[in-house]
Image 1 (cartoon, one colour):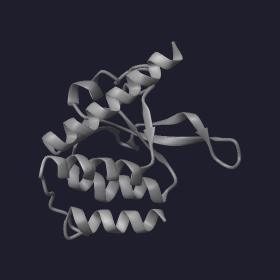
Image 2: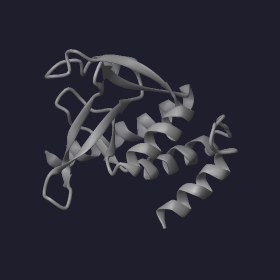
Image 3: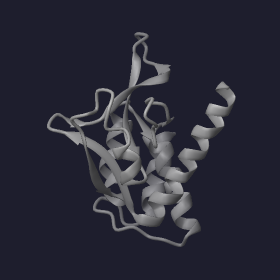
Length: 152
């Protein structure tokens, strides 16, 4: 059963990558205190505490379906893909948090480091010959170079 879940989660994550690169939109859940977070199902920090994850979805309906179980006060918020990459993924990585993609109503989903996710998104965008307008990077090439350097 665990294995099936694992494959299912990976497929949902791949769908997230494909979809957000198609639409240039990512969805988060937001309330007055900020964005919806969950604690990692797998990973702990040096003190044995679960690592925090900020959750994002590739479709508004998917994010909406998670407005329950403690997330009742949250509302879907649309984020431009370039902004998601520059401000969210990079910030999340710098803060040593994780990105969660397409979590389900049981708070179960794919967990990935911000920089790793950026590389997956770049790969998908290049495959589709798409370019994004960034504020802090000249283009995808520049972004990729800087992320790879940061990961070394």
